[in-house]
Every structure is written in structure tokens, then in C-alpha cells.
Image 1 (tube, rainbow, N blue to C red):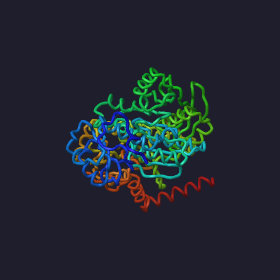
Image 2 (image 1 turned 180 degrees about the vertical axis):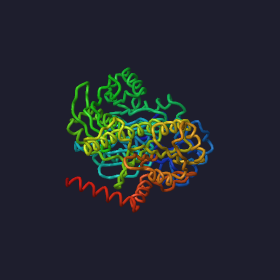
Image 3 (image 1 turned 90 degrees about the vertical axis):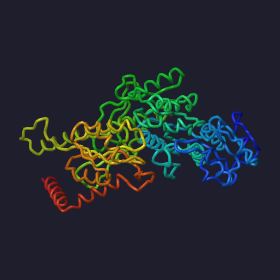
Length: 542
């Protein structure tokens, strides 16, 4: 147990007894227990100062408040409460939480990852590499929190400080040597990870997202850069994607501060780490990785597409920063399971590729569709080769065969950056053969209005609108033929659809599975499958 005086410094304005014991810390008055400290944060939709009375009634003995708020009456009404005024309650919460849990990041090595896209997959890759080395590792991220072999459902990509520091302490106490942590722009701006000592910081990319919150790209970049300028320790290493223009800017900022950087990329000749001879198939990726221009080894991963290449390069950069041998890097990358909702393939024996992906920004959607087009091209070439082997006397042109198309299902979230909606519509219609525009998480907006804004960017007529997401997914499967790629984008791992403030159970993966099962259980499909299998047997006998 800590006393109040153990948790504060000279920045706090104190009224009351600071020798009291603090039992716990909370920002939600409903979670307060007797002897706890309540920190009043002002959020987007509400203000914690409105719940101070409720916190006191529930047993709070210490209140942290914004010193700019007039609290004289409340202080006079509750002389038995210790009042701590601070200019920035977000900073106060981060500082107190770090002190309460005894600076846990000093006892574990923290690897922080930020960027618009790729954080989750990169974090899983790094953890897998550390696991291959035999290190006990913690993970804090969008999909789940992991402490060694224990897994917990994630509530935030980066939790609030009192939860974040508690988790770091638990990870340290349970023997974790490393913690891999996604750190979002919201978290960086709200100081959720402040006072954490980050040893390696990763920048994946920066593309348009969350501008409803940040206002513009400059503010968004400033928030992301805090991981490197404010949280990275002296002697720490920054691993940065310099194919991204903001990554290049970040490198210049860090060089001016004499912070060591390891860069990666595919299109920038100055990259420390790059990939050569990239091969991409439905089964994954393969390439030769170069470090300082020298080929080091071959990387093989079940991850698909160019995003898989970037994410593995980032994990290699981290491995170099902490001195992991290439043998273990290869092993860790190769054994990384496909990440939930990140180009997650749904395979029930159908004759087309079905994929669920979290792509919910214009850049992520474009990368997803480019990956699909590349895979489709590879499939067509393979099909052409197969036909040539079967009929060697036939003359083939480079255009044959015209098999396979990309069918995309997507929507945009409500009460979020509206500027990306038309742009995502343009990208989807340009890079897909057919698009089904549907609802995502409309939240408090009218789904049909969101769809109308998406339609503004669509130039062609290769789309239809089906607001019901389950029906839209079913239609995509109905339209799919042999060799097609069905992409369901936007929600990825999420197990809900948020409508009018309520989260209703919904999974893209389950909806896709149900639709595929209905298709392959049809007599016509079974007849085709049996015929195909029979032909295969005959081919094998020949």
C-alpha cells in the first residue's frame, strides 16, 4: 500500500491529509471501493468532475481534480477528503499510476509500436520471435492482452494509465522479460503510457485516420511522434518505415536528438532493412532480407501480401535492435499464426478465397485490395501453367485464362472521420471487380447517410448497396465463382456491430462461414465437388 505523499510531487496543490493510504485508483466512480483515489478526467463525451460526489459516496478518500475547476464548495463540504489539484489530470493519472505500481517498466523491457496500420500484426510477430528465443513475454494490444500463457480480452488498444501500469507490474511479477505494446495515437495524446520507459519504439506508417479526433494530419503526426520523443529512453532504438513520408520526417527529428534509428522499407534506397525477390501466394510470402545492402537470409511467413512484408521487416528491425540471432528471427516469423481479423482466411473447402480484414482506412483498404489483385494475378498465372501442362499442343496467349475476380464488402464507421468515406469508395470501386457497400459500425449515424457519402467517391457502376451487413456478405458469397477472392473489410476481429450506442453481437468471420456453408451444402455444389475430386483421382492414376 502507498500513502498519498508517496504518489505525488510538487506539481499537486494539496488540501487535506497526505498520509492516508491509497487502496486503488479509478477514473470511473462506479468502480470505486473504500479507500480508493478517484481521478476526474474530462473526456470527449463526459466530465469526471460531474461524478466526484458519487465517487465520495462509494468510498473514495482522495480526489484528483483539474485545478482550473472551481472546487471550493466541494472541498468545504468534504473536509475528510484529501483534494489534489493539478493542471493536467491526464498527466496526474499517469504519474500517480506509475508511482503506485513502482515504475514497472524499469523491471521489464518495453517495445512500443505505433502507426495507423500494422501495429497488431507487428506486435504478434515480435512476440513470436521472443517466444522462439525462450523469453516470457507480455502483450498489450487491440485484440488481446497476454501475460505469458494467460490471455485476456482487450478493452482498449492501450489501456488507461492505472490499468496499463498495473498490467506492466503483473507482467514483471510473473517473470516476463519483455512486453510488446501497441500504443495508439489516442493513448499518446491522452498520456496513457506516459512515464513508461520504452526501450525500442516502432513506427509502421501514418495515413489518414482519426481526424475527427486529431483535427488534421499534423496533430496526428505529433501525437504519434510522442512515443519517440517523450517515451523512448536514452540509449533506446527507433525502428521506422521510411517508405512513409512521415517516417522520413521522424528520422530527421530523431537524428537531431542523436537517437539511434533502424530504418526499413521497399522503395527507399536509404533503408537499412529491405526485401529482395518477394514472392506472394495464397499461402504466404517469401523473400530474401537485406541489411545494409547485404543479403542475410530467406524469410518465409504465412502472412499474405505486401503488408505482410512490411510487418515482418519491422519485426526484423526490432530483433536487430535487441540482438536476436537471425535463426530465431526466421523461426519466430515462420511460426506466427495468422492474426485474427488481419487478412484472415476462411477456408471451408470452397473453390474461392474468402478473407476477413480489419482494413478501415483508405490506405489499409488500398493495400488490402492491391494484395488481392497481386494474388489474383499469381493465381491466373498458375492456372495458365496448369492448363499448358494439360494441353501442350494448345496455343496460349499472355491474356489467358481470364479467371477470378475481386469482390469487396465494406462500409465506414459512424461518428468518425467523414473525409475518408468517399475516398474509400473510390479505392474500392477502382481496385475491385465488384463492390457491395454496406453498414459497418454506424454508431449514432444513419447507416444510409454513411453509405451515400461512400457512394460520392465511386466512379463506375460496379457496385450495389446492401445496408444489412450479414445479407451483404451472403450476397458476396453468392456471386463468387471458382478462383475469385471475396474480401470482407472493416471490422476484422470485432465481435459486435455498434448501432445507436449499443453493441450487438456480430462477427464478419462467422457471417462469412455461414454464407459459405450454405453455398457448399447445395446439391449443385456437392455434385461439382464430387466430379472435381473424381477427376483429380483419375489424373493421379494417369
